[in-house]
Image (cartoon, rainbow, N blue to C red; front, side):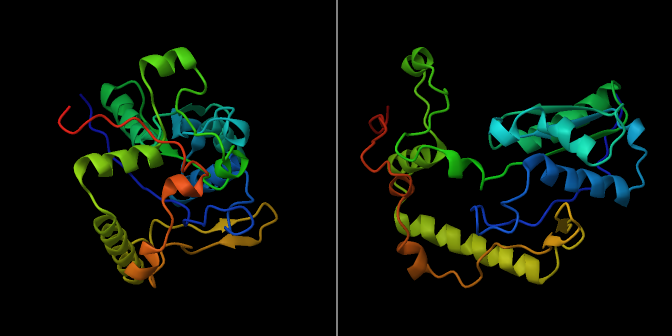
Length: 246
């Protein structure tokens, strides 16, 4: 079995995921993906006709994020049309699954050069959702829902915290620690090599730095945030939580 090597990795800066506020929120998802693919080709002097496949992860595959985003992003990045592309969905594990599949293809001998990654525009889907309707993973399949009720992450996280006895203070402390570590890593330049600037289609700069994290975050401000369910207008909807020990 052949070995698989990761030759390079890069990403865009993290923008604020809100339309009208985030510096990247106005861009087309496949265009944003093409920014990364183009940078990888330029940084490594890739002959894109030799790229066997582009394996891309995108969770919310509808609207602007539909239509095989990985393939469209590769074309937008100027990749040769002989470089194919496929887009998969494993929710929040989509990107890492793409990389794993790319490695497996190389190790099996099926392919020699694969580009893998993912795109998710969090500013896009919350803006077009229905705040009064609990988002369910079954996409309205009531027969499936009767067999396997599946909610979204916010509700599930709240249920897990209740079942495991994780209180609000512990969650807020973890969030604060995460913000502090991220701010320190950015200040120390740990992401400088992997971070690439994003330009608008007209060439003007869209974003060249992280809009997150928030180094001035304090426990007091975190404790004042509303719960996820209330943000989305679902404070009256309660998930079915099994009894402790079941």
